[in-house]
Each structure stands twice: as C-alpha cells, then as structure tokens.
Image (cartoon, rainbow, N blue to C red):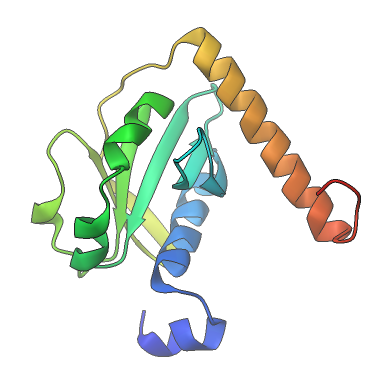
Length: 152
C-alpha cells in the first residue's frame, strides 16, 4: 500500500491500518468496532466481539514513534480476552512485547501472525463490556442514518 492510497482516502495511516484489521476480523466472524472506549481514559483502536462472545483488542501502530509514544496499552489488558498489535508489513516487530498477539495488515486486509495468549474476562465484566459495545455500535448506526437525531 503506497502513500498515494492514503492521500486519496484522506485517512491517517492508523485509520487505514484499522480498516484492514476490521476486514480481517469480519472474515474471522468477529464484529469489529473502532475507537471504542471501554473505560474512562482508555480508547482502543479496534475491539472485536467474536461469535462465542470473546473480546479481542487490537492496537494499531503505524510507526516506531507511534509505538514508543503509547504508554497506555497495558491498561487495555483488563478489557479483553486477547490483546494484539496491528502493524504494517514494514513495522519493526522486534519492538513489540512478548506475550502479545500480532496482526500484520494494510488498508485492504490483515492476517493473524501470532495468536495472543488468552486471559478470560470475568463474567460480570464481559456482560458490561458486551452491552457497552452493542450500545455504541447501535448509536453509531443511528447517527449514520440520522445525523441530526436526538441524543447522539
């Protein structure tokens, strides 16, 4: 994927990467949601809800500087069953911490290269997170069809 694709779409590199990761998640039967806030002060790039209720978080990093600037990623571990880094093919993957998943992608798709270890959410947190995920997705859909709607 070249810079010309990014400029045509008008999207930042991280957003383009998130798009490809969302396509990958959908192909695996997961429902992806970008820019999801699981708790105050946290905003994950992609949260994906699986067919059996599993919750994956994917943090998209478009460059070495982007990765080094991220000091909050460990806070996301309490909000998912599996945590992944989503990076472009030219990203220096040796920077990524051991014990995390790895998804390699671009704006058109992605592939899980390393499965993240599982750390199951508690039933209460899973229920609250799933409900928040559903509400956020529904609100976004409603805004897309009625941008002037009440309460969005």
